[in-house]
Each structure stands twice: as C-alpha cells, then as structure tokens.
Length: 309
Image (cartoon, rainbow, N blue to C red; front, side, top):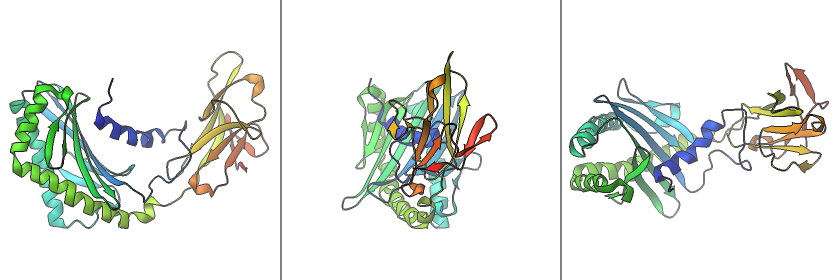
C-alpha cells in the first residue's frame, strides 16, 4: 500500500519524539541540524471536524526542531525560542496571524459546504519550503484527508492525487480559480518562508550547533522469560538528538544489538558492555561495562562515570 506523501514528512520528524525515551536506536551520529543542503522549514496542520465544529492544531519546524506553535485560544503564533521570530516586523506578524485565522475559518465553507464532506473527519496539511544552494527555494503543500493523499500545491498550481477522487479534482478546480488565495499561498512559500529560513539560520546558529554530552547508565529490565535477563542501556540529556547505541563483548559488536535493550541468557551477561557514540564526545565513545569497575550501584541499576574506549 502506498504511503501518503504527507506522511513521509511526518516520518522524517518522528524520530525526534522517539528519542525522548530511554530505548534509542539511531544511525551513526551526526549533527541534529546541519547547515547543509537542503535547509527546510515545515508547517504542519492537523484539523478535526466533529459535531459541527473544528479543532485546529499547528506547528512550525526548522529542520527537526520545533520552533513555532499555534495558540488556538488567541489565534496567535507562539515562538518557542527568542530567535524563532526572525526579523518579521510587527505588521507582518499581525498580517500573518490574520491570514491564518481567516484560513482556519474558511475550512467549514470549503470542505463542508463546497466539497460536501460529512463529519467527523481529519485533515492534515504539510507545507514545506527548502533552500538549495544554486537552485533557489522549493516550496510545496500536501493535503491529506483521513490519512490519504488528497491534493498538493506547487508552482502556483493545485493538483489532485488519484486517490482523492472527484472531490480532490473539484477542490483543485475551485482553488485554481481563486487567484487571490493561490497568490497568497505562493507568496508564503516563495517570499515569507525563505526569509524566515535565513533569519533562523542567523539567529538560531548558536542554539542549533550546541553540544551536550549524554548521561548514561545501565539497569535490568523486566525478565523476558525464565533464565533470561533484559539489560537496559539508558542514554539521556544529550543534544543534538542523533545517538548510536550498541552492545559489545570486548571489541566485538553483538549481532542484532543496535538497540538500548538486550535479551540475554542469565549466564551470558558477564563481559557485555554498552557503547554510546554521540557528536558531543569528540570521537571518544562511552563504554559502560555490565558489572564493571567503572560503574557504581544506583538503585536496581548501575550508574557510572563510564570508561572510554
């Protein structure tokens, strides 16, 4: 079954939420936010229609870092960092907020009255602009309904996805006839969004490139079965988010152990160690030995200063 295109964007962001947990599995470490091509800004919208009313949620993401959210009560943009406003003037900000307020208000007329959708249903929108060196900016919007691709916007034109059927075709015909709306959408993607990217690159550089070393410790998890142990390697407090965790014996990586938990027979835990790689460590991996001298008892686990490979 084909994955909806808008979900691909969500899949790119999803590891950010997974990494707040202790069980971590991520590829070889690299900086969370690289100042390399492409540099992107995403707007994500989730709207639910039920019982003749709408609930709208919105967020803005600079690469993999959330920088903005939408205050549903006041109808205003929330800047999650002092630098995430960029250099947008007060007038531009008020115009943007009015534009978003009007945009959300128009949903009922468009999807319910004109397209005749019956509630309840969920609407997802992903707007993306990317900066490519030597190629300028690329902007596009993807819309999904009930998790299925519905329509997209690029190069000043709305296009239906086949699975959107007749309603998607009708929606695109109506939107393409609304030149004022199409122009506003194009302006946001081709002017406002690129300027915001440049501002965020400048204002957020120190925050985005900071390095925080991870805290690491080992513990036993719930027994996976008779005669077995669950070894848990905890890694937390690090920045940027990508981290690499591997269970080893000596210098030999254990097959299938690129994860923070390891199911072993009770008599085979001796000699195992958890290796952690992170960009803040300057190429010196953290190695925590199960039952080793570098570890100190902490509750039902072992918290350590860790030895370095």
